[in-house]
Image (cartoon, rainbow, N blue to C red):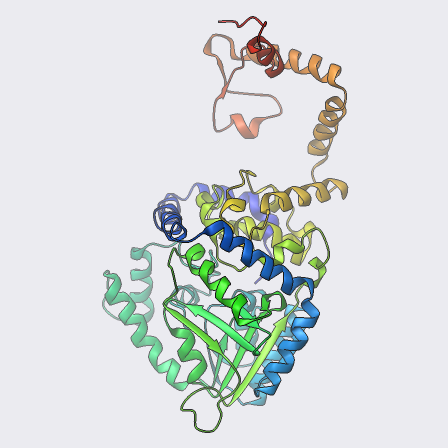
Length: 473
């Protein structure tokens, strides 16, 4: 997927003006947010989160060791483990597997890493048909290969009427508007593809070093059809997804579905280990793991290592007031929302995602709901600091912050200047007591009124309310 994060401001403006999108995004709060709140109420969320955070840290602190153990155990059970330093190399490895086994058709489950790899395009260029089987991803694929806007609900930005029109146009069947009928139609279209595919490609929610297994979680069951029907199964995932033991996986599964969709457990959960052996009725003849770095090791041991704990539940974006208004496409790459505002600069370069660290209010809601305790707002603040250090922000912004910093380190000067500023703002408000146009702050006053202050600074008002002070009326 091409990086378009440099167009964030323009794309965000377009999304804010799209009333249909605004209505569709209300599903985030009416469905995901409320469902999560109810689901976590039935467990000790803080204790479980602390346990999962510790287990994820244990895996990341010795990542090389656990990957070696995973490779050994997966190989012992008949799988082939391949490592890719870049997403381009990962796509090449999958293409070579397809070529080796003379694959003509690939069926896929939802995988954000394959979005990083542009895998569908790579396969198409070599003449291999690649078909998405997750319903949301399938809808996007038949809509001119539109990228997902959410990592859990990739088509959350569309409504039922849009999808009904798309199905009628693509499937050449009578237009259906009832959801059960529409899902049945998609199932009927996809079923022959499951039965005729040569290779299945899945993501991996977690890798288990202890057993050399991959855990795949869905709500549609398509992951089972992608892994037991084709003769070749390729699991593609990031190297950071490794967990040491099955007990670690059990802890993760207490929080992943609750945080993602508000379910106590997902509808389908597959723990896949090795190739089909004698006496088994299903499973692949050949199994491959393609484990992708793609910038992940660059975070190990640094200020942003905590971001690698992310289990891709989507809770941060569901609760983010920015994402709730603009959706995922505005962020311009694979990962949207607060987690994407950290991951995209970390993976593709800060200079290619100038505005993403600023695409947040730093309200801390993402920190509160994260099931692995990632301090996302703190990481965004660190990225902002790096932007300033590298002079990647506009000179006006850097000058303004430098001037503020100069005064903030000199309390008397700061007090004098804020006193003058408060009186000037009161004068600008005049009798209306609000400011409709503010010099150097048009980004605020172009769309809203700013209440005019009383003419006193915050410190003056605090002193007036202390014992012995005089409170004005």
